[in-house]
Length: 289
View (cartoon, rainbow, N blue to C red):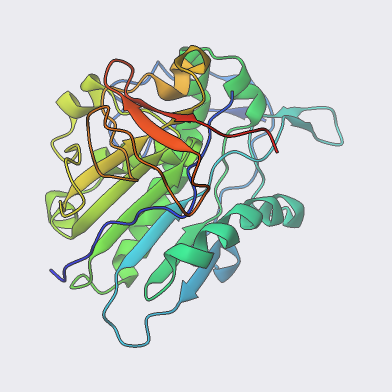
C-alpha cells in the first residue's frame, strides 16, 4: 500500500447544535424492526448513471488515493403534489442534487488534490428527522439512506483499482454512513483502507464491538484507522444523537489527550482541545464574526 499521510483538515467543522418497507444493505442487527410509513419515498438512485456522482480526478501521476465522500444533511421534509410528506432527499430532483453538490464541491476543493474523489448523491434523511433527537426515529428513517450509500460504495469498489489506497470520509449523516460502511465492507476491502473519517458524528463502544474494521486512530501515521471528532464551543452543547462518541482525536496535533493546539490556518487566537471525558473537540478563543 502506498503511504498516505493523514489530512489535517483545512477547517474545523463546528457542530452547533408512498408506503415503504426499508431494508439495510448490511446486517439488520442493531436497527429497529422494519415498519410501514405512509410517506413518499423518492425513486432509488442508479449508480451506473453519471448524474448520481460528483467525480474529480486530480491524480494524473497515479500516486494518490481514491477518496469516497458522503455528504451531510441538506433537505427538510417536503410535500408531494398530492400531499404526501417525504423524509428523504430526491436524487432525481436537480435542486436537491445541487444542494448536496454545494458541500461536495467545497470538500473536493481540498480532498481531491492529487487524489481521485468520488461522492454519490443519496436519499439522505431530512433535517426534520434529526431535529427529533429520537434515536429510534433516526435509525428507522436512515436505513434507506444507509442502503443507498452502501449500494453506491459497492458500485465504486467494483470500478476502482484496488491497488490504490482507499479513504472513506463523511460529515454528520455522512459520518453515520461511514460507520455503517465500515460494518458493511469485506475484510479484503478493509485491507485497502488508509483511513476512515467520521466527522460530526459518533463512534460508540457498541459500534467497535460489532465491527473489527473500526480501529480508533492514535496518531497521524496510523493506517486502517477511524478518525472521529465533533467540535463544540462548550461541552454543554453536545447533542447525544450525533456526538455521544467513545473515541476522538485532535486533528490539529494528532493527540488523544487534552493537550491544546492552535490551528494557525484558522486564526492564531483559536485553541482546539480534546475533552477526554466527553470525546469531543472544544474550540475557544474566537468571536462570532
